[in-house]
Length: 367
Image (cartoon, rainbow, N blue to C red; front, side, top):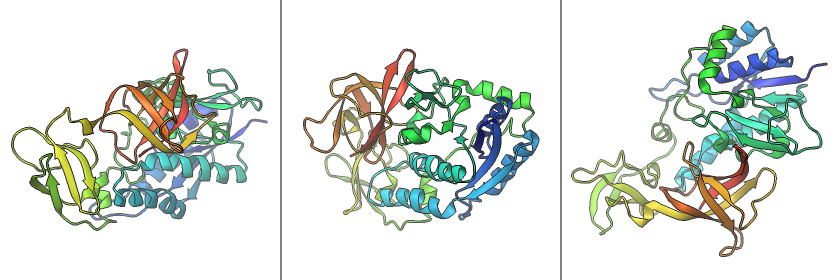
């Protein structure tokens, strides 16, 4: 009897091809649309109905059962409120990472298993290895540890957003397109004749489509104008809310004349944003990171061992070493080269090189 797999179908080409591949491989596939957000905002129509119909249309094409799970209440509590609270506190949280941790690989997994699934699958560009080997296995190895590996397509690799997923959740998950380049996924969609083959990839916030983060936040937080202050303590402009600004930000400052300015800090109590026009300012560059809220997929990193760290999606991997010498609770990450504009609240993800692949060790929140 074939394994029953519930595929998270968002209405995009990646999850559509995921469902098609698994069906072709002989799995008993059910498509599931997760309704996480449906609220329209001023001038912004939430695309969930269109996405739902696109996912359903593909399920019909593939001849697989199709369901919708309504996670809107839990999503608001676990992802949206987390993001809003972070911005109000002056840090820069990542809702995509929290969505994977709390919704896709927790809530969706738990609901699917109770519903009769053996495993879940998603359209992420990442690979899961079962056991001690690094090649993704075709089936679950009950005696081995599930490991998360970078996707074949380095430009699309999404492991940065997946580092907080638990090992036991990975053991029950499949990510078949992690072995493919994006153009090959498009080509497969055309080969299968899927209606989403030419659909553009979604941009912006993970759950609201094309909306920018500032436009979204303005609907949920109250802000006041405040001073933009340079390194000499001179007020050189006015911002429309300190919480909108992140370290290294250049655009949106509206400070005219001369060299461009970059955000190097902010004071939420005073509602002030601090800037510099010196690209070499030491507040823009880091050679050391301190991480809290750590999460390690298999085992924690070993002090003195060589690792690589990524500080934002698509950022290059930088060689690093870890220690706990200076702090009792937090992990210190020493970088072999400077990294620009690391912002509190963002995640730093550690990788270990294995042959031609990189294994995700885990990571934490920059403080």
